Amino acid sequence: NPLDNLPANIEVLTYFGERADFSPDNKRIAFMAKSFGDAMVIDLETRAIRCLTCNVPGAVFLRVMHLANGDYILIGPDHFENISLSRDRDNELWYLSKERGSKPIKLNHKLNEGAAVSKNEMTIAFTLTHGQEPSLKEGSSQLILFDIDVTNPVPKLVNKRIIHESKDRSCVLEAQDFYNNNTQLTFTCYEPEGKASTMSIDLKSK
Image (cartoon, rainbow, N blue to C red):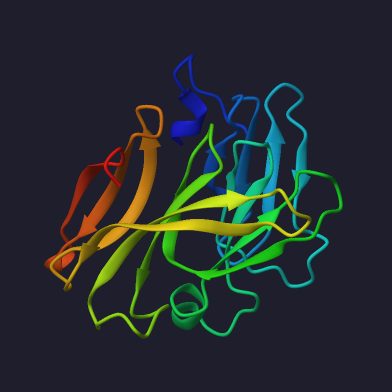
């Protein structure tokens, strides 16, 4: 068992979970208990684990990510239908306050797979395909940038920008990470025959 002989700079935090995401101050890690399940967060100083969505009956979220203000973005359908439809057609964005007992709020926007979330600005990038937006041509994908407006009680996505587009399945896009002070964004280009490339885009001109 490789866990029995870990290097000195590696330690086990939990024996369950997936898709870990560090908080902007590096003091907490949010993660999913499982796919189509609950979102959790662990305090790195106390090692205390808290469930963020256990007050949501039948939670079926796929990802949780920290926002710059300490709140969270959740990704997933509002109910489970089947793995294919729930992950593709019904996958959407939710806003969750860091305050205990808060309920997720729909941001009324679907997306394909995951998202890139800035750690120091209220900005998010994600992809749309024909599966979520039927007006797009079959096989095409768009990489989209939004700001998250929290000035009102109900948060919303504003300032939509399409920053990159692929016309066919030769490159299906998926946002990954902001870097270089949010001036650049890495994304994956999924290619035919199971191949993929990691690329980046300059956001200063977008």
